[in-house]
Image (cartoon, rainbow, N blue to C red; front, side, top):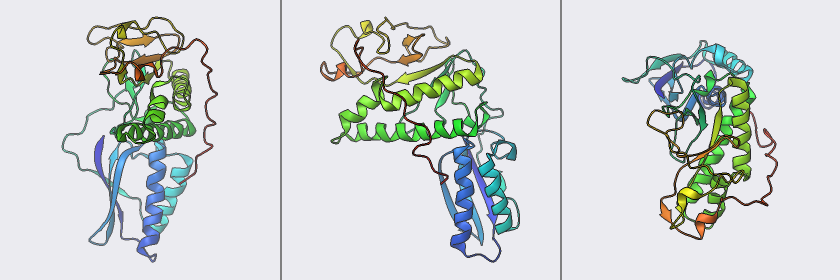
Length: 282
């Protein structure tokens, strides 16, 4: 991620609120395309509308990575401000090249406090800028929305409120609605890239004995396969090739809660939720 400043300029005859709306709609289009990530801050400095934001990678500002929606909103920005926004990298330590998606394996992994893109290389764990992936705009948008939903469930679990266990089930059950959608995204990414793409199943609670003997919750086969340092799966000692699932060992001994998300021979696989059903162009 690269801290960047967008200087939209001072605008023309419109009110500040109208100019901010135009700028924020354009910024939103860049988030949906995976060009930006994390949070952003919009301020007026010496009469110029300035946005500080995180670019997902080098060249994320280039128009060739814009969606049709982004290009349309860029035209509105130019009309309102009389120019294109000026992009300036403010980060002293930014990468000299982007992380490539061509890797031995790819893993879909995020958590409540992650600002970086959710797809990472299996060998190094480095996040890959979504705007570089050979996916359609809808595919990139689905990936961004899935990450937002994952963050919501992860925060609910961490807050330990009345929805704690319900949220935990979404995170650890391979057949939950959240996991089903994430696994479908993995399949689409693998089809587009040709790289084996795995879905990370979170695991916190563990039994007092036999944690390494637990079976893949997707098919019931053994899946504790430790890897040496630098191997394509070295982050995750639990892996199932057919199910494209990876996981880690639990850290909190709790026999009752350790059963959540474990292999159940008669478990029903729900259909993934219809993508875009909760989407909007905002």
